[in-house]
Each structure stands twice: as structure tokens, then as C-alpha cells.
Image (cartoon, rainbow, N blue to C red):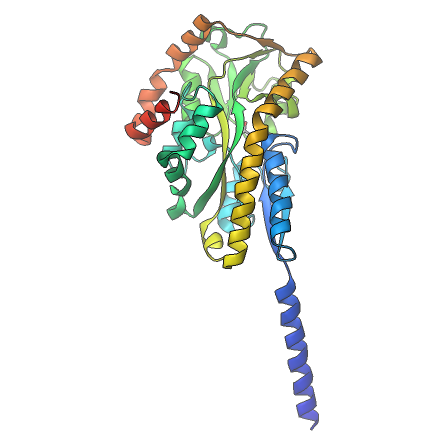
Length: 329
Ligand code: LMR
């Protein structure tokens, strides 16, 4: 009798416990390296809002901005290990996993974000989302930041000869390394979180980035000149662990997919406005001066960097380069 009572008690507490476990929301961590006010920062917060609204009580999204949880060096490993579920590195940071994404780093490849959009929504751009699936990474969407500008601690940055011998911080990308070597600069791969201090202390002389990053990281306070080169893009691939994603219950996957699609549209609509507003804030601050370039100046940069295209074509593929080029028309 006593035994049966204990048995019943144990059984009922086990049922209660499994009920409690089942009621726990799935914790989804989204880690990124930029400030909250940037296009990516805003996109991540929108994704949280939408995912939690679509999957009430089932999913809780925790967003970690500004390299708080993982910086550049660790975030890709962390997603593969399952320590974080979503990250959105710039397309320049996938060199170790695929050469195809290098198409995005080729200097002067895309004239503007409209061309980038056209390429990404076309068949080749969409195929790149699943390019790294066999390595455990699934792309869920492209998020825009904007066009890159170059900044330095010198008074003039107008022509390729002005950058000769300068130490330039770059993202972990072989194309960007070749791009700066082509103009005689000295490129140094460095994690995003370390750039401000490196500029401030003179470990590097300059860097390339979008206005939203130059503003939110305060690079404009420790640089003298920003050359408006628009020579490349900073754009992101939101990636998740493909095994984790494939193992999600259907309703959760559906809700997260919808939230991702809506957050992508939201963030991409905001990106240009944020960069324009941050450009204005930099002008108003009166610290680094923005240097406009003539057609001839830009042609000189384009010509000096052109060999990079030929150098990386074998890894990227001629077809992909041509498809990206066509998007400018
Ligand atoms: C950089 O490292 O400069 C950028 O990729 C940072 C970012 O995520 O925008």
C-alpha cells in the first residue's frame, strides 16, 4: 500500500515536471558585433519582437550586440557548437567556408544597394544562401548595411598614391587584403571590436567601413579624412546552425522563418536612411572631414584595384562574377 502511494507520488511529480519542461520557451541567442542603432542592430531587435509575437511562450530571443557575447573571432565557431543560434557576419567573413561569397568583396563590384538587391534576389544570389550547408551553416537572409568608405589619419585621401605605405585595418578577407595590397597599403586583419583602439593609438592608420559603423564606433573622432569612395559593400548573411534548424518543430521553424523574412525587409528598408543620417552626424561633428572624389579619382582607384578580380576569379567562378556585374544594369 505504502509502496503504491510512493509510486503514485513519484509518477505524478514526474508528469508535473515534464509538463513544466515542455512549457519552457526555446531560448534563441542572436549575437552580433555592431551597435544597436545600426541596420543590423535594428534588424536583430525586430527579429526578436516578431519571433516572440508569432510564437508566444514558445520562443524567447536574446540579442547580444557589440561583441558582448562573441566577437568576430569566435562567433562562427559558436554557432557551429550550438552556443548561439543566430549570427549575421559580414559577407567578408566566410572565407574559411566558401570562396564563392568573395564575389561580394570584389572592389567596385556593385554600384549601389539596388544592384546588390537585384543580384541577391536572383537565382545565383539565392543559391549562395545554402552554399555552406554541408559545413553546418545555413543562410536565412541577406541584411544590408551600406557602401564602404575609406578613412585615414592623414589630411588627404583622394588618389591611390595617398594610401601607399599606410596600415589599413581590414576584415578577415583575402580579397580585401589583396585590394589594399594592390594600392600599396599595408592591410591588417583585425576583429571589429578592436578597431577603435587601433585607430586611436596609431596601430593602424586607417580602415574601410560604412557611415553607420564609422559613426557608431566613433571612428570619425580618431580619423582625419573619410574618402567617399563607395568602393565596396558591407552586407550580412544571417546564418544559423543547419542541424539545429532542421531539428526544430515545424511550427517553430515556420514562425522563425516568417519573423526572419519580415525583419529582413524591415532592416533593409532602414539601412540607407541610417547611413545617410550618420553621414550627416559626422559632418555636423566637424571632426573627420568627408572628402568627395572626382570621376577621375574614382577611375584611378578602380584601375589600381582591377587585378584583384582576375586573381580571385578561379575561386569565385566566372559565371557568378558575370551575374553580379549584370545586376548593375
Ligand atoms: C567590420 O568588421 O568592419 C564589419 O563587418 C562589422 C559589421 O558587422 O558591420
